[in-house]
Length: 227
Ligand SMILES: C[S@@+](CC[C@H](N)C(=O)[O-])C[C@H]1O[C@@H](n2cnc3c(N)ncnc32)[C@H](O)[C@@H]1O
Image (cartoon, rainbow, N blue to C red):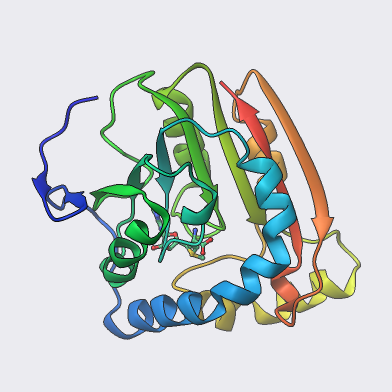
């Protein structure tokens, strides 16, 4: 895989080409929020992440890594191509990577268009990103485009709850403040349907519920889709 990059101590940063709308305050708030919540979130999600991210190769693409919640699941010595358009996340992501022996190759891009070559990667990972991207179907098509045949997309997402449930009512009620606070995140997307209909050769997916104080976030899916 060849790219033009500039190098820092343990990371590389590609020049920016992104249509991402950077909000100065909310961007910084989200970076601080996800950093502060990381121990709690990881405690809540660890057993599923260990299953979904098991056996990753030494070069991985992650879309929307944020401040690095998934670095601890990557093999030590691995290279992470990090597709992260939100500049507020970068400092913490780059600072955290050496703690886990991971080298970051940071691409300031949106996942809708990674600019990575066709069929060039073995694994793409993400957690809680398809809720935030502008076009989930375009991102899933892009992931399929860059994966080698047999390569895997390992994901974890929060999704729309079943209609008629209290969680669905909370999602409907809170959707606007939720999206405002979390930089455009939708708590109403049917991402199970989006992944299942994205054209992967196979999809193995678990639907489950967590019990966090963030009610709209509690209905989730996690799994592996194979190109
Ligand atoms: C809810 S945060 C999740 C961060 C991290 N994956 C985690 O689990 O803590 C959503 C992330 O997706 C990123 N994001 C938003 N739109 C994106 C896009 N179009 N392409 C790639 N990343 C995007 C945000 O900058 C943010 O880092």
